Length: 111
Image 1 (cartoon, rainbow, N blue to C red):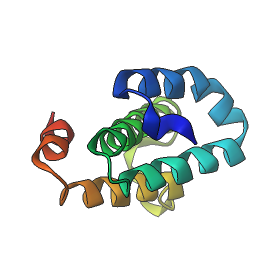
Image 2 (cartoon, rainbow, N blue to C red):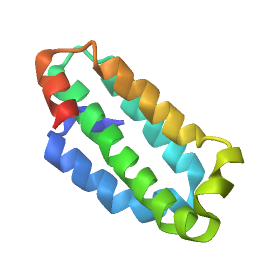
Image 3 (cartoon, rainbow, N blue to C red):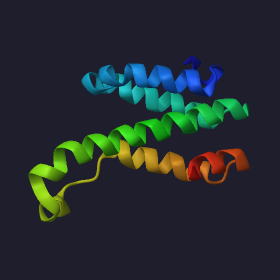
Image 4 (spheres, helix red, strand yellow):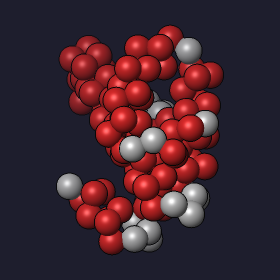
């Protein structure tokens, strides 16, 4: 709940520390997504930046975990019928929402 009140670096460090637990407990991961989603709609620009950095971290972790296990075992042709990851779709939707935010958020998104 208090991620929006932390500095951006501290919040990302906390999310990184929780990453092994998030893999084991999907309900905690769902709760984190809800908290980040609430922070995107906050009035405070720092809270919105925390949410953006949190979603970017989750996107990096999601892409690295899907590349690590899936690409070597299935190959390119086998992945055509695989359903998209719901977490990945949620992250993409929230990152699209950041595209209409302030200039600082768009700059961070493009970095």
